[in-house]
Image 1 (cartoon, rainbow, N blue to C red):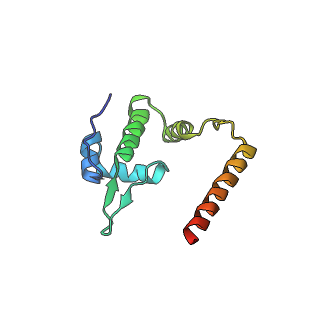
Image 2 (cartoon, rainbow, N blue to C red; image 1 turned 30 degrees about the horizontal axis):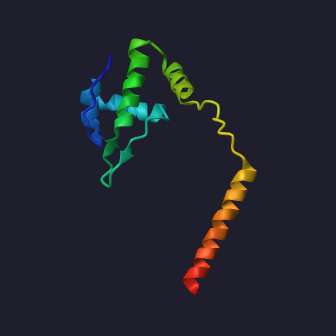
Image 3 (tube, helix red, strand yellow; image 1 turned 90 degrees about the horizontal axis):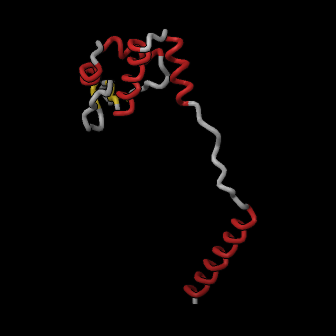
Length: 117
């Protein structure tokens, strides 16, 4: 069930409703229920969905209509999906960084001294 999303920066609520096959009032209700779905609004208050918002709507629709989750279950599933994994360990060596930082500072001071003379 891969839905083709047009390559645009912003979509109005009517366009999103047509893409996902839902009524606009359903999208407005989902905005209140799902914290992941927060389209921006322009100066006149019109909702502007980004591509990532449309993808979230499609995921919510899949969870509710295809997988038959309840609203609470779909919320839980979306939160699990967003939960960050373990932080990557890049082996940061503080002493080596401080040595490098000190060398850069010394080089910059020398350069500044050359420019002043």
